[in-house]
Amino acid sequence: MEMSMVAEGYYATKSAHLLNSKNAKKTQLPIINAVYEILYENKNPKKVFKKLTDKLD
Image (cartoon, rainbow, N blue to C red; front, side, top):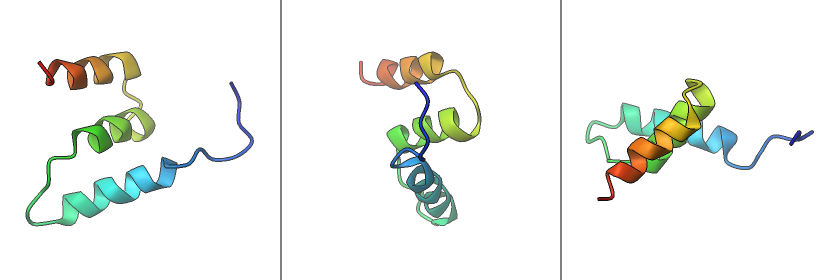
């Protein structure tokens, strides 16, 4: 599926990730981190979400 617009949350993900990385008390943000890895580090979505769901067990 192609989009002619930027998906909502694309830039917000980067902002949230960077804001948290600058915070002295880093908050656990596993979903933000997972989405960031997929969008900005080109990691495999299937592997990233598998790792994320494994933490739920």
